[in-house]
Length: 276
View 1 (cartoon, rainbow, N blue to C red):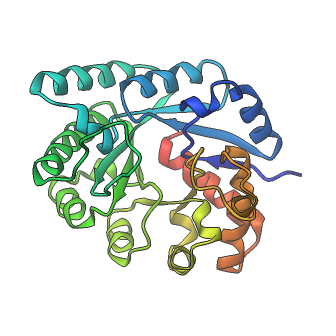
View 2 (view 1 turned 60 degrees about the horizontal axis):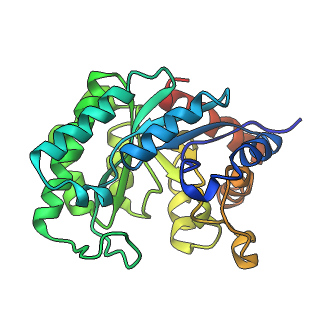
């Protein structure tokens, strides 16, 4: 019997999958990946994620504005307009979370924003929009998918300040950096830790995951990114939800437990996280 898996973070709403969506979902189901959450990164991708939920039985959506795309929010009117759009999408039955939202200090080389720079003003704008989106998650009783890239020093004090008990067991550090402080915060606040294909080639992630209780772990592909080994070396892009069993198998190897235990527990964790 094939184990049942849950891909808690796959960007099937990105253009890379425009022509192959049905095939990708079918192939994922065939490998036991029966549940998928597709997160938005802006208004357009969030709408597309919601539309997809009508096409497939066990595909769910998250909606939100990624910190990278906060760069194009130039005015208070822009903020209100984009948040209003996200709030409207939250009324859809298969929207289970606000996400992917958070803070990001990474200097992207490949970006559609020609003048993209990290400034304190930009970070403050990210913080303000994150707070408003968390308020939406609480108001509509949705889960929270948190993005953090090189921004721990801002994110953890912010989360400590605004934390609400209703976020416990309803929040996940997506593609969590291998960081003891992040894990400590997650443990103290009953959060989940998202683990991706980089565990198959990143020694720091492998050491990190050894320290994360299985009861806190959820599996992700972050498709089309973070292709796991051995597919990465073979350059078999893009990453797809059907590769979740490879990630699960490596988690089992690193933690010295059975693949069946990883599949069972991480799927139960994901269902609890998203109230599915």
